[in-house]
Length: 92
Image: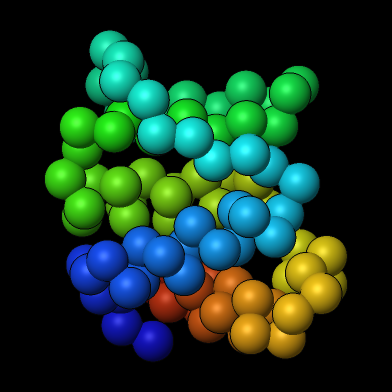
């Protein structure tokens, strides 16, 4: 899988969060990394002023950090996407 910096690819990443127990929000803020993870309340906040490639990179980094389990997703499409994403990002 090739990481594409498009709105469609961003939508697929957002769908992973929608299907997980984490809430994804876009907010303005002074976080240099582009995101903030509040693990106790399971909220992921992305800097809304980041360009699309920054948002995608931040979401991929968070997905790898959270160790989301493909088995936790009901839809096969989300399971497959997460598995492909893991295989692609592990090479970096």
